[in-house]
Image (cartoon, rainbow, N blue to C red):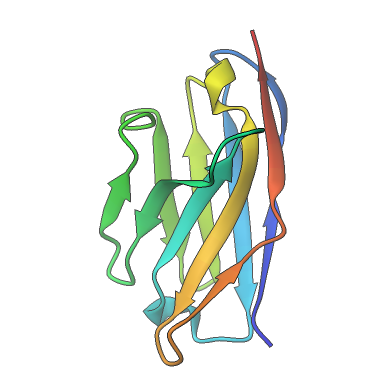
Length: 117
């Protein structure tokens, strides 16, 4: 059974930093693309960052230069380092994984990030 477990959310002041982690189990982690999405109240879920199995990354324009996605295949974990946080970054952040052998998508339970001004 594939599971994604997120951690690292919380409350931070504007300009601060947080690091989110997402630990995966139940699948061969290293071959699957991973990503982080977020959903603010009243808004649609949006892509924040994506990383391929080979380590190539893409980012939403709104977070470029501030957020960094990375993966540690030995730990089956993907990270999102968030710096220079802004109040508009406040949202529930979700980990995402595509299991390439089945083409199924999986989501974590979400972790709240709140940035105060």
